[in-house]
Length: 264
Image (cartoon, rainbow, N blue to C red):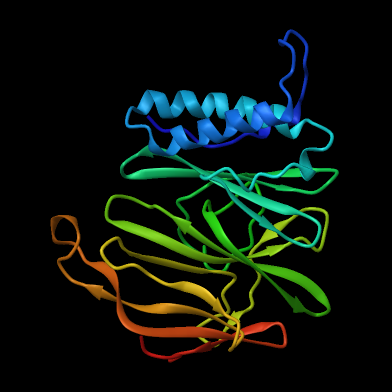
């Protein structure tokens, strides 16, 4: 059974007609905290999906509150909450099965919000295209870094995706909130083949991959991957780290490819 995360419908129309007495913000946050845990960790599929339905309802009620933007979500263990200058981006995950996860999220300002719809898997052009919130590379973001380009502020987003039983993905995407409609991707990764709008690194579960921002060098840094033949299911190859690291040095609004950063 496959479910696509999307709370757009629940957020589009908020009504209290026919509902019981609305819960207070604190009670809704307790519900969200509980359901987000069950969505990820419950063994039974039906429990995870039921928790998601209840999570969706509680999240909708919470976000309809006039001052929800100022309510902290940081204590919810299975949420990622990252803050920009005047917004926050919140992401979470639903475990479909051991081999599949789906991701959901919102970008919230004090007076509006935008829903993110996970549309993976992506194929041709995914590293070079620019996408809208309704076509989003779903991930649980763990770091946000602002940077300047042409006197505008953009954001580097580092995210994790549990692809399947044998592979994971990490992504360095660009969030563009310089206009009313947010966008994902910007062709700022240059110097390696054609300019890329994002970095997508798929790697074996047996070989953890580092992807981070080195403040001292002003660079996006990640492990170099190579193909390990016969390591995957049914003898397929898997991508693993070789112990070296490559990077993308920030300069004048662009990230310039550097083949060798340092060995670890």
